[in-house]
Image (tube, rainbow, N blue to C red; front, side, top):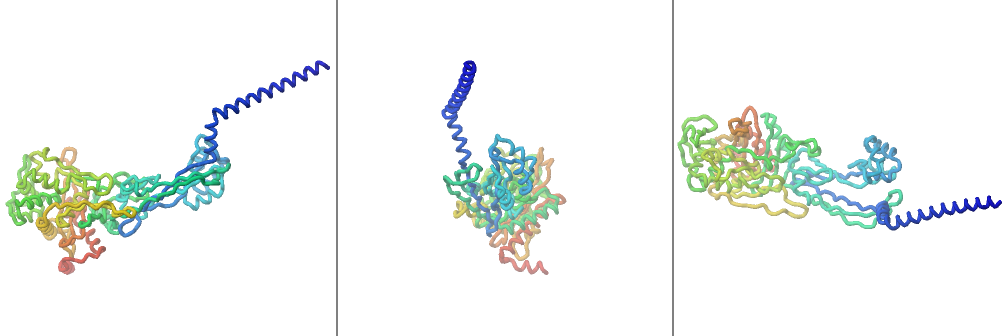
Length: 565
């Protein structure tokens, strides 16, 4: 009996010892949790019940000058999961596949992983589809509204408007230039969730500041027509590309800035940089004879010649080791300054440049703004390439006056001819008239040439179209003033292995009171290379359409009658 009592007492003491040890372990564990782990666990619990997140701001729309939307935000729903709270990953994956079109084989393992607290179910889901999925009330599934950028005009002005990325930040074009204004400022909200993850209260919030609207100078109708004409020109001449600008010379507003080939702005990811960049602003080319305007204006302004001053021009003119000819074969001629421009004589332009002198010519190049960015409100503008006077060689006076050995951007050249159209006053070109309720800074203005010289130049440019190299640019019922250009594209070893030509025409209409300046540049045409043959007809098509669209009255109605017989 005594032995059994002793055995029972030992068992009791053993049980008590086990309880004592368990209690001690619990005490130590509790002390550890309360003392050492308290902060981390409290933070974890707080995170499970409280959640702070940003409320995205709506990105501002982009409009053309008539109020047509060029870019807008489309409302979508983004659905995501916290894998640590997901109870049935299989059911979620199957439903996501059936209702949202998500690949279940990729989603399921992501939901099973417990290391991450954030996994996209589907980003930018259609709101109706998202609503059906969210009605399932799966644990650990959440959503938030998100905008997706859309471009309703598709390819129209795609290179000008640019594009925004998946995070709704501007990455190119005006979307990048005005990103801060377009983006607005996101709000913030902190919510409390129950054990199933459902929101039950809002602790704090800050308001969203929606992005500002951007109003551009672009007219989508003029833009679309210019793009159509360029596509036809590229196709006809087998060219690598083409660029066109339509400019209001009085205000500096760009009505169209087009190029071909183009791309659909809603599928920017499928287009390379050759398609997405705005060549009118970022790319340079050797202008050829359109640059002769600088040489002629300089000589007139310095009082060295008049439009009627005549020169006997040899077949070629010797400059350093080169004898430079005109583009067309001819005999010795006696040309006035007006005829030098009218027939685009290289020999005549170099003769005027030598009379002007290298230092003065360099000053006039600078005065016209070549070698300097125009300051147009667009990212990535090139300043062009102008050789400093100190680096001129003996042959420079023979190539720069005729637009070789110098590189310009299409927007530079268009703005220079716009200055001629605007009585000699250059106006800074721009693409935006208003951001939200505010207008940007007024465009810069400066006088390049006197009113008298401008009148003389304008008259001579009219002669180019009436009876010179630019007759294909003539528009019945209107006077047109402009200039052709054919610039060689130098290869790795200079002009000896040229890779082709840039054919261009730039002009103004109506010449008596210019409302529009239109520039066309065609890259590496085949079958013909001259600006008067390749680019002038494109100018004519664009300008004729725009004059009718804008209801500009004819200033030479008799030419319209004679054209119709």
